Length: 106
Image (cartoon, rainbow, N blue to C red; front, side, top):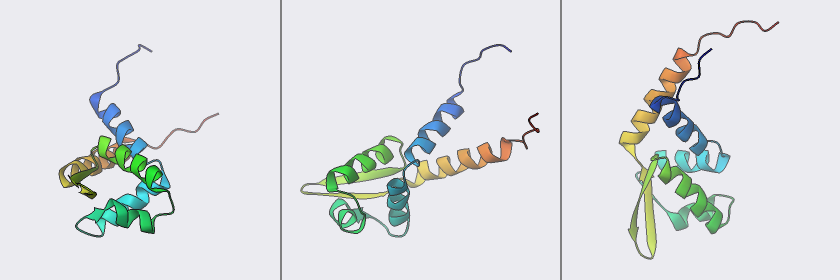
């Protein structure tokens, strides 16, 4: 079998799934999806993590493009990045639909 480069789609799916790979990040996305936006301070009162840890999780989600923030010091307001979320949903749906039933290993 010949080696081949990874596709942009494979890299993008990996980036998205990495961002989703922690339960706090999943909780953040669920929280943001249930409302228009949320302030960092409000999230830190609800989620079972320190503010600094929450900031790291928010950074991962921002870098993956799944959320966006508006800085108006001293507060930061976050919301779902709707366009990138639509793209992520489409990529993941295609990924799971494209995977064929694996053959039996012997």
